[in-house]
Length: 83
Length: 400
Image 1 (tube, rainbow over the protein chains, first blue to last red):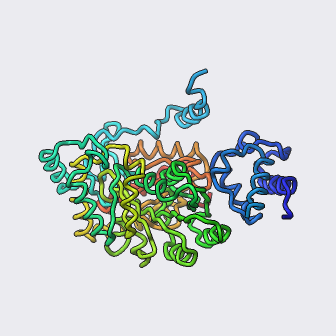
Image 2 (cartoon, rainbow over the protein chains, first blue to last red):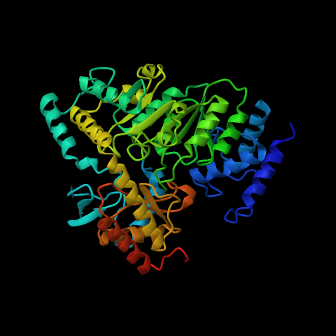
Image 3 (cartoon, chains in turn brown, red):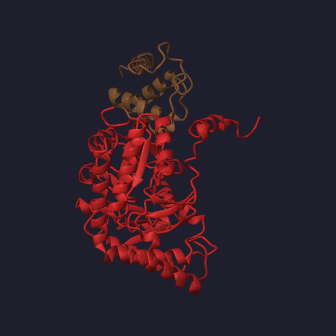
């Protein structure tokens, strides 16, 4: 498995920065809802983009436990390893 | 700290919507319906273009008579749930009528359409199963997924290829895969490409549930919805729907040819732990179903009206949803503009629904209209004219 939490986290940050509305100073410990001002729908739509890039599906119930970009990266890595 | 302090953001958002003396758009009172298409709002006769009453049957004389007779014969309530004392002969009759209408062997009637989705989805998709939901699914579908214990995966709206990709990722995982789509989506009125989803279902061995709440009585030669219109009813395992749109009453149902549906009666909490529909509603629903079956011309008139409204709003320079269907939404960019537009429409005698993000696709506020078979061409033209007047007052057009 080539992806690590750090590499997935970097990819998420890069994807987020493509959106001009996202603050420029985000990093792995940024909180997705609080720091990025995403509502529930925006979070789900953003996760869909990451899913496509990494060819993985993140079940919605897993999103409930995710606060930071690193949390999301760790979740994706564990899903990739499980598959 | 107040228990309501977590809703401070919501309170501010509502205050912003009502700033400058505007109405609360979520608390409009229709003082009295004068007909299916006109209601008394703020003491004025107002054109109703936001009711989901697609065939106008909420005011059907036959349904009203049936309700009155049933109330006299059976009383006004059942005081019990379907699995206790709340199943009367009328409930069974309605389930049989729906089986015959949909040409399916099994039917469960719920007390609302919301509960039909909640009760069916939460019971069908269990702990070790996967639920695959269209990204633009109605709240009742999302809530059904939260009530159950399946793993929930979203796919891109109306995109069968995207669903296929996500099912492929689940290759080899145990558990049933239940795909949920809607016939007509309630915000923009766009129609599901059911044939494409049926093909994915066949290829992957997934189960397919179609919520035809907005499409039954509207689409298909016999009004059975998009699955009928697309000729793929055999591929749809479960059809869920509501009585509160084209049938003009309240309640919901699930029909299927799968024998197991009857077992769901014993494990679907929204079916088991709420009072059943009262007799007068059942009787009115059956009378409305008879009208739906016997008056196919209502569907023709409805679609003619939908095309007239859709074309009229586009000609007025407004941006609408992609298809002419009984839900026609004007898409705006700015919430404050949408709120002002909505208030002005009501000032001038047209009621529509104001739909705000995040309940709308792509974060756009919508002026959501729904058309009826009983609207006259003059009423539609009048509504379009008022939309055009307000758009002009506010300097809005497609080119802007």
